[in-house]
Image (cartoon, rainbow, N blue to C red; front, side, top):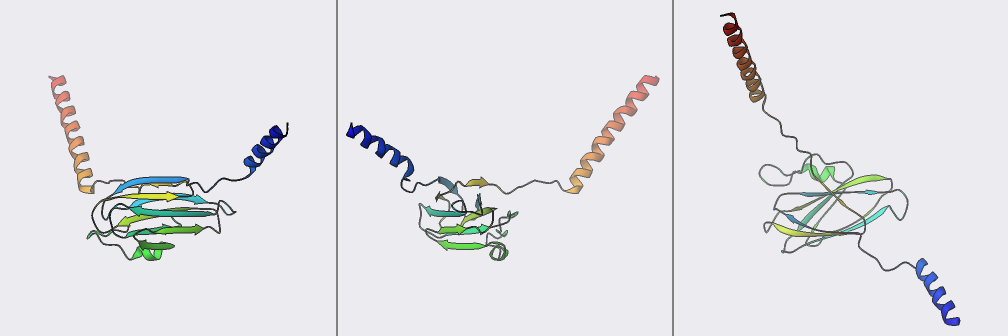
Amino acid sequence: MKQRILIFVLFILLLFIPFGHVKAFEDAVEIEENTPVFYLFSLEKDAPLNNIKIDISREKKGNISVFLFDRRPMTSYITPNQTLDDAIFSDSINFTESETPSLNVTASEAKIYYLEILIFANGSDILYVQSNRELSRYYLPSIPGFPLAIMLGTIIISVSVLFITQKRKLKTSTI
């Protein structure tokens, strides 16, 4: 009887004792040199949902640049000559660059944060991202547009073809 009571008490205690730290998010992503990878995550105002720890590593040797934004980035901050635009340093709220960067962020208000990860050396690589909170992949919105001349030319040609075919129909119907 005592053994059953002891097992029952241990079972109840195990329900209330937290287990060791478990990673909530792990991702392996292939990244090209000078091509950013974005993640987003939300933090709440109150503990324990107001803190996140992110660790990043790569297979090859070389530095990884990590930028944290509190507003949605609309550009990758990579210039046409494959260098980093200086505006990223004023727009980001946190920045780190090392072989194995780590970010520890504590929020003072409920907000969505954006993470940009870049590599500038040693070609393409595989990054390993680990976090104690869930991260979501974020892709920059890229809406391709047509030059105005092509759009106007297409419209003029289409209307001309319609006009000519209608004119021919009218000629053949009157004969």
